[in-house]
Length: 310
Image 1: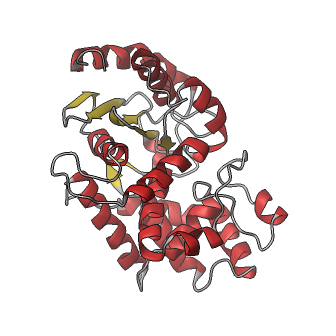
Image 2 (image 1 turned 135 degrees about the vertical axis):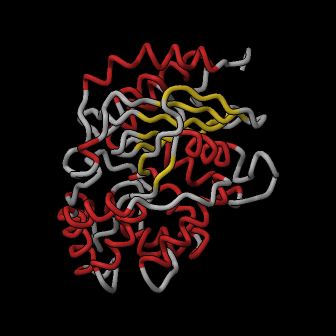
Image 3 (image 1 turned 120 degrees about the vertical axis):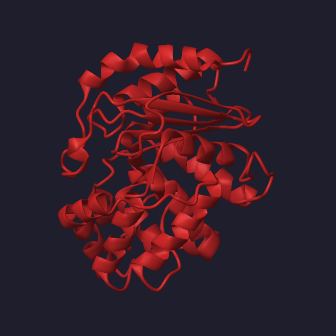
């Protein structure tokens, strides 16, 4: 970075992209998320030297939603190893909406194409060790506590319940995969764990710190303690590049070019080697399910500081 980025400058950029919030809509197909304020915006950057700069409503908490897929993948890999995980979930981008069942019907034995689409994420959640949904989610929370240095983080029970009750497409995906023996056991328990996983609440400063750990090859920037093996951090970042922004991942790679993962709460996690972690929150979504403001802000940051990895 050529010069120090100030909070005032970051606030100015946030103000510049604020009008774009009107170009999208909140994820009202999940009833609780439908109550989010589309103009509640925040951004944080956790630099490799440990400095944190943030702007907007940076203490506002929101649910991880699909951003949890990256962290769940890391835990499933820790629990089972690469061979086990990738025998059951593929590594290829899909180009289809995140909730699509179409590719499952094209492949035998209905192996999901990657861990970032819902079908793959459900299989990954199923693979996390634990006898009960609460135990699985508790272990995922423990990893998040390690990555954020904040042990107060929990999941939002109201959001989890709202998602569980309306998750008809995800139930269909699980039943289809159970028919083909991709998953076993109780569909409802797997869905329970997954919806709680997606409902874990953080703020943009937490997100930026998680992104910085991925950027630092799995090590905590403050203590130097290794939280994830280097090769697992690399795998997760690679999936963020190829599949992290749903079926807009290709255009995002061209316009922004950084490893990133979005969630339908309007959050985006970014991770750039040599720069740090980025957390953005703007609940107004485009037709692909990505934060309208988040995309614009990350494009500004990438162009201003030449962050594209390509």
